[in-house]
Length: 237
Image: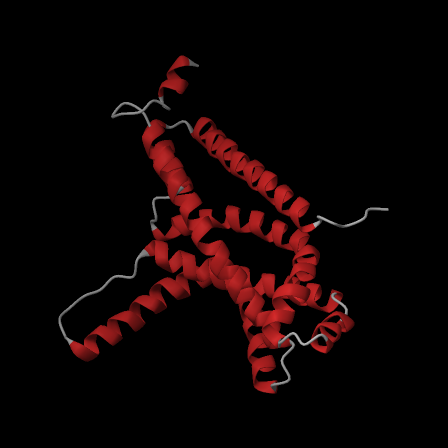
C-alpha cells in the first residue's frame, strides 16, 4: 500500500503533479465551456420561439444535428475540420505557413455546441412554463422587451430551468474526458499515461474516479446554493 501511495507523490518519482495538472485542465475546460454553452443554448431557445421561420428552422436543425451526432464524432469534426478551415484561411494571405488548431480550443467549441443543443431544450421548456401574462403585464407597465426579459421572465425561467441545467452540467463535467482523444493532457489522459508506466490500472483509475466524484460533489453544492437563491421569496406549501 505504501508503494501505491508513493505513486501520488510530487516530483520525478511520483505522478501527483501530473494528475494535479490534468485536473486543473479538466476544471478549466469545464469552466470555459459551461458559460458558452449556456449563452448559446439560451439564444437557440429564443430562436425556436422567434416569429421568423428562418431562425426557427436553423435552431431546430442545430439541435437535431448536435444531439444526433455522437460527441466523439463532433470532437473529431471540429478538430480536424477546424484545422483545415484555419489552414485554408491562412493560405489566402501567406503560403508555406502551417497552423495547428489547439486541442483545448477545439474541445471547448465542440463540447459547447453539444451542451448548448441540449440546454436549448431545457430553456425552451422553462420559457413555456412562464406564463405569457407575466410579460404582457410588464409591457402594460411600460417595460421594454429587454427589461421584461431581465426583470420578469428570466428570474422565473432560471428557476424552472435549473434542475435540467444542473444535470447537463454534471454530464458536461464527465464529457471533458472525451477530449483526451485529441491528446489534450487533461485528467484522464494523465491517468492513462500513469497506468501505462506503472501497470497499476485499478489504483490510478480509482484515483481518477475519486477526483471526478469530488468535482461532482463540489458542483452539486454550488448548484444547491444557486437553487436556494432562485427560490428566495417563494412560499413552499
